[in-house]
Amino acid sequence: MDLQQAVKYRILNLCNERQITLNKLATLSGMPQSTLNSLIDGTSKNPTLLTILRICLGLNIELKDFFDDKIFLD
Image (cartoon, rainbow, N blue to C red; front, side, top):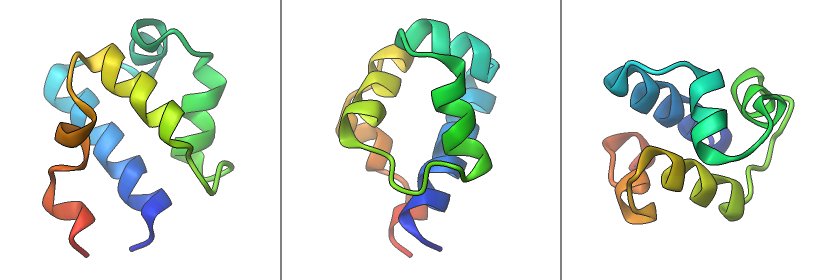
């Protein structure tokens, strides 16, 4: 699994755990929903650390918590 896929699955898992939609996450993160959609549908092949940081802020987690998942070990 490449980094883009791992980020995609991590975002989807975090949204599922918190029972929020991508639209809600976009609102909480202060970014356009199209940015998140690009990450999820694979249009964006190289997510920036700033984008992931904004997602973390929206989810009220630290960046280290985002990457603290077994999905990133593969």
